[in-house]
Length: 406
Image 1 (tube, rainbow, N blue to C red):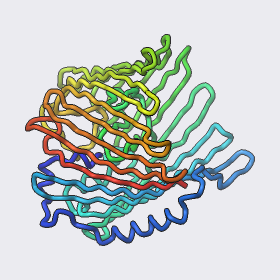
Image 2 (image 1 turned 135 degrees about the vertical axis):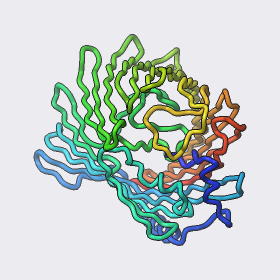
Image 3 (image 1 turned 120 degrees about the horizontal axis):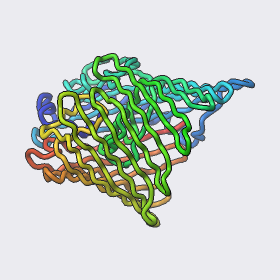
Image 4 (image 1 turned 180 degrees about the horizontal axis):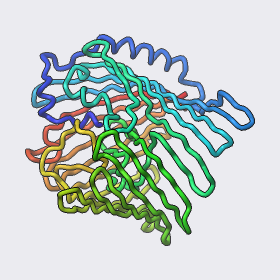
């Protein structure tokens, strides 16, 4: 869930006298993180082999991260703070190279005045629709919350004729950069605060070679009725293009679609389309097309989204995403620019334009590889919106983070 997607109504419910209220526990958590970062930032960041026999080995790696988020609601002159300090540990256990167990464990301390707001009750458990609820948390006080969870927990087996994965995993079927109509299991938005973070799903997944391509099948069981998912995909190559054909039932929606990914000249060209038939509603089409082109230091990406299932009403930012793209308005265009300022510093800029409603979102970021295993990032999300538009009521968000890999 992106904190930059908070709606105006919810923020007004938690208006404070002071614009920013600092957490009493934040400074202590930050001190330990910076201290550990200082003494460790020049170590190698490769996975370490911590145990090995003839047929069995275990590898360990992870990171420490501190993330600051400042939300500025100009309509109420109210500010909200969040500081996330996360330790992530990834353990991979291998048996004879064809059997692997992966566990990714997160321990987090979250501080700031956002912890005491009603919105946090919806944000604190992002596994609400999973079959296994592998997260647990506790309030230490009104501005400090600690939690731990299994971000990934799955068993992978290579049976030669097919590969099988069982457990909490990531399954990514889309090819687009911003909006992925066929990526129905691990939704990600281009404006989210932590790019690349995906919740994962509890599923059994199979991939098997078939002719000149391969076929995939997936089934995900939810502990809530009506939220199960089952789908299949056939992937093959046609000329210079990778083609995918997808079908299944995603949380009471019958879905059929396709993807293509290739080149026109020296530029990338790709697209996705899906026909979605909800229960008791008419079918609609969701599609996106775009491409990218790289210069010496600059890469530009342009995409267009058309959502025939646009609701016309504001989207509740705290309601868990059902996996299908949800928007208030129908048409969007997105443009990103990635520029190498130096070999270690990159500028990432993304602009999303709501064509029908006339609103705009702009997300600039500076990423600095301070050391081989240390990344520093600063940025924000800014909105220019009209009444009734997609981004109406969204507050300005500032952010910064430091990540240390080990």
